[in-house]
Length: 155
Image (cartoon, rainbow, N blue to C red):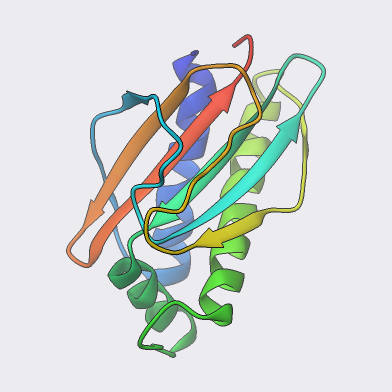
């Protein structure tokens, strides 16, 4: 998969969390993922289709991290993942994908975005509908981990 295509999603996640929650996520080392089990507790998944490719992106958060993001962004800190948290994950997924879409359009990649789906729970699964390789990118913070998965065809 083309790094030129992946980097805007990574940059966008760091930017959204930094801007909206004043928190810095530290990127880890990308790796291939060959199963559907999420690494965290709540995930936003969004499909994207364009003339050159189709695929999907997911952003998964460990519970302590997304609870802290909620606290920093909205001043609330629920004790567990609830409907407000899942709404927030959906909104973050939209913001990250929108930011990446803007960066990618400058490079000639255009695509339409679906509405994000949010899934939560221990060992929940993420089903990418594309036949491409799944790239997993971890991000660390003192409150926990976040993970981006990107799966696109023909890039």
